[in-house]
Amino acid sequence: MGFRTSNTLMVSMDLRLQGYTDQRGQQFFEQLRDRVKARPGVREAAISSYIPMGYENSSVSVFPQGQISTDKSQVDNVFDNSVQPEYFRTAGVPVIQGREFAHTDTATSPRVAIVNEAFAKKTWPGQDPIGKVFQTEKNGPAIQVVGMTRTGKYLFLYEPAIPYVYFPMSQKYHSSAVLFVYSEGDPLQLVEPVREEVHVLDASLPLYDVTTMEAHVRYGKPLLPARLGAMLVGAFGLLGMALASVGVYGVISYSVSQRTQELGIRTALGAQRGSVIAMVLRQGMSLSLLGMAIGLVLAFLLLRGLHAVLYGVGFTDFPTFGIVSALLLMVAFVASYIPALRATKVDPVIALRHE
Image (cartoon, rainbow, N blue to C red; front, side, top):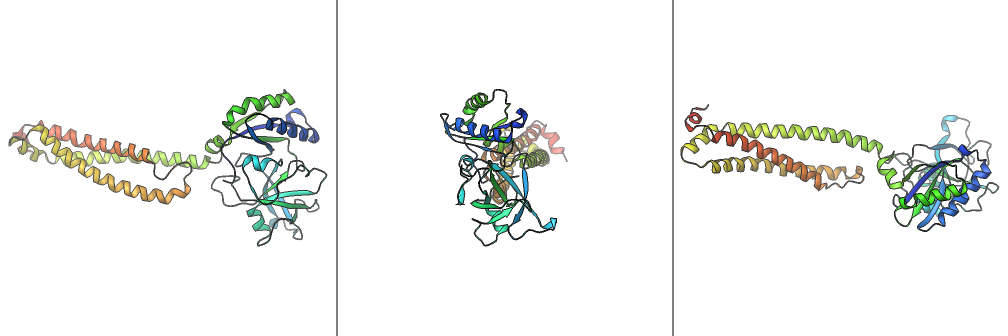
């Protein structure tokens, strides 16, 4: 996905609620980062305007140097984020070329940016993006690319590769932001320490959306379409299993009932009731086991093809296969046993007259 999901705590806040100016907000974020980073159990901490695959996003227009067009349809809009220098180490987004942001990238220094591979390939195909210049406004300041990251996921888990650009928070400030904390152990153990540090700086500042990155990925927007699809497919799967159970019961029950005359003859000739039932069960269960073996082979082959679109689920889901197989075998057993038991209780004379 292009970022780390484990050992990461996220805490959201909005300084606009407290009437912070841009300069005071920058100072607050820097102080909060330093205080949290000094806490025991914290590896890294950083502030970011947005979280990967979150519900809020921002985009900017991109005008590569020497390619400014007056046609709005030809202007590229790319998603962006404002982050502190430590963000890339904290969130596990490695800069694979060039450099990360530095504390010397301030509001008064030359404007800089870090782009992803998709941005570089689309804007400067076949060229080294480091040192390239673009603008976000036609008459705006020039922004130099100083680093490049791999292309990750920014909106949804199954999105195609999209261009993305990062700006230093010191050069593009947002009052609403998210504190990322990379912990040594369970990130939830740092919730109270982080609250304490925030309240030391501003006791009345509310915090919201306190969660871990792992919980965000599993239960938030990243997997929302997949989870809804899984629920729909799961509902159809349960319906299909119910119909299959009814079908198995009906076929085997009908097959056994057709042998009423045969069972009557066997009983009249002295066959024990237990041996007759065992014979019927053996034949019925043999058919069920054969059908189940074929179904399991086909299921394994199908799931191997679906492996590329599964997240958090192996293509060999043995618990599910085991539960469904046991259920269908139980249905086959009942479908064989009840008609066989009923047939053995019929008077042999009546059974011999049965058509």
